[in-house]
Every structure is written in C-alpha cells, then in structure tokens.
Image (tube, rainbow, N blue to C red; front, side, top):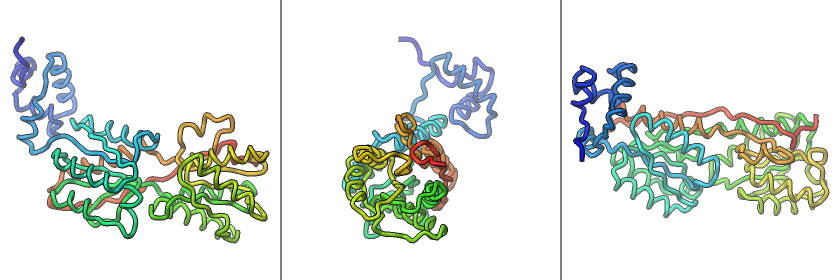
Length: 343
C-alpha cells in the first residue's frame, strides 16, 4: 500500500507551512478563502484523508450533529434536513438523523443516544407531547447540562437559553384566511391540528383574527380538529356538510387534510372553487401537480434548515458555558392556486 498523504506533503507541494494547511482544512477564518480553496483542491488531488479521530481529540469536537424530527418521509422535514446538511457539510460536520414518530419516549431515547455519541449539538423538532404545556423539559435540560448547543426548529419548547427557528404561523394563517375573504367567502371552516403544538394554536389564532378584522363572526362550529392525513380531511368534510348553513371555504392547517377534503367534496358533487374554496398549509410538492392545484402557505423548510444550522454554528463560536438564546422567525409565503381563486 502507498504512503498516505499528510499535511506536510500538501505544504511542500504548495510551498506553505503545515500550520497554514491545517488551518485551511479546518476552515479557520484567519486563512483567506483563496488559500483555503487552493489547499482543498490540492488535498483532493493528492488523495488526502483527514484523520477525524485526531481532529476530534485535538479540538474537543466530534464534528457530528444530531437532528431529530418526527418523520423523515414528510417533504417538509426532508427539506429542513437538506438545508441543515448543506450548511454544516461545508464546515466539516456530519449529520446524524433520528426519528421520533411522535413518541416522546423515542424522542428521549434519541437524545440519550446522541449524547452518548458525543455530538457537538442537537437540532430538534419536538413531538406534540413533549411540546405541550404539561410536558417535561428534563430531556432537554440534560442536553444543556452537558453544555451541548440545542436548537429547536418548527416545533419548539419555550426554554431560557435555548435558540429556535420557526415560521410565523399566525401570519401565515392570517394571510390564508384574508385571501379567502377577499374571494367573497363568508363561512370559512378551519381544520386545526393538536393545540398542544404551538404551531397549530397560532394558525387557529391567525384564522380567528382575520375573521374579526373583517367583521365576520367567529363560528366555533366551523372549527374542526383534523390530523394531517387524507382520511382526516375526508372525515371532517362529512361532518362539515351536515351544518346548516354549510361553510363555503376551508382553511386547513395541513395540505394532506386539504387534499382529503377536496376529494370528499368532489364525491358530493361540490365544485371547487365555485362552491368551496380550499387553502392548505406547508406547500407539499403534490399541491402544485394536482389537476386542481391547491393554494397553500409555504413554510420555507430549506431556509429554516439553513438558518437552524447557522444558529448552531454561531453558538459554537462562543463559550459553551454561556447560554445563547436567539429567536428566528421566518416570514410565510401564501401561494395562490386554482383551489381558492374565484376572482
């Protein structure tokens, strides 16, 4: 087997010091971008392999970051993870992905596993049960006790000294409801998720405030709890059509429930958007490719992931004993398509 390339070999090839090569490979800000690029290109040509174990022992970092999400098979979380990876990979970090499947016990196990793996930070979107008012914060405190940076994204727990990156769910719901009102809708139903999650509570409050600001009475009979699934959207529409008078629009906190609602409305020979306008939330890929494209609120998941990673990186530049608390709120974007466009 041939001799492995070392930083001294790269330094000799470029006529610079080994210390400069080391700093360039570790993204030291004191090294210019041109020098870093040159060192990286040369290292690649010379088949240089960095010893991660030696780097970890020297720096006190593993260069691994844990990311915990409810599910990876949902486009939103997949896009968030992509944003996190794109941002962290360029600084030499690797991402370890864990799923909770909305189970707080699994969430706690994931946290313990990541801490035992000596990760440099944990970025998490919590389960509904761990986010609720009566839930414990002990698993998250365990992270902080070890001076490991913790960043919440999308779903968060209110904790001092912990940063978060979320979308303005209230504003997104407000925009969606005001759009329906502008289309002439007066009886707008709302499909809400579990109020234990702050995101769903905020979406309900945004919906409610839009009605109030427009002088439309808030009718709680038009507010339905619906999980994020086609089946739930279909189930709720069956109850919704029994109301007298029935609603003339639906603002759903979930694109999946919105699609289920549209499918069920068609079974009852309801025309969309003539009889019912429908707006969802999340901008799942299928919403734009339907025969009837669905209006929705985009949550900017890629940007959310990138920002969560940037917040983590910012924390690594400070003394770990100093708890940073940064609240980043992203602006939602209303995407108007045929399912709600009457005028």
